[in-house]
Length: 132
Image 1 (cartoon, rainbow, N blue to C red):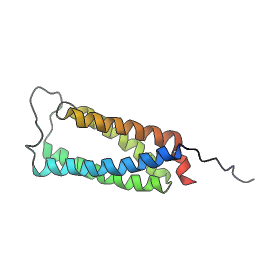
Image 2: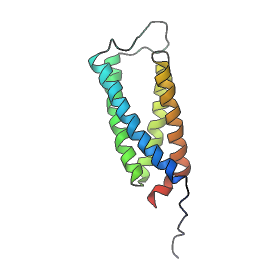
Image 3: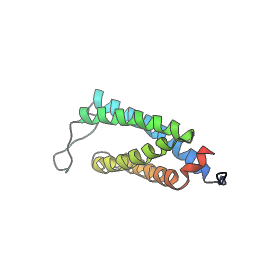
Image 4: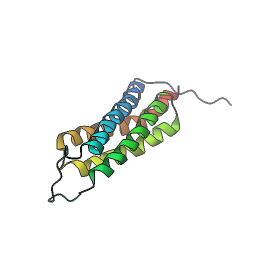
């Protein structure tokens, strides 16, 4: 019995958008991480916020996770299940991390959280369409 071929919908464009945004956000994250590593005074850290971290450490974590996001974005373009899985997990982690970063850089964090939500939706609902 042959496997039933699913029809590719217009939503596959959203998945392509999600993979492109993963790559783009990954590159943005690399710049954020490098900025924190080489110029930790760029970001303002005050004592009144709940989350305070060493910005150099935060920069390295951000840099490494961003590289993984870029690799997963390329895998999503190729229709790989692991890329979609990693993409959803890392988009969730990115949204959570940027929630903690809201007091330090609110507009940027809100933008990244919004993009993460679109990526999660596209990958979960229509990610399988890229394999076709």
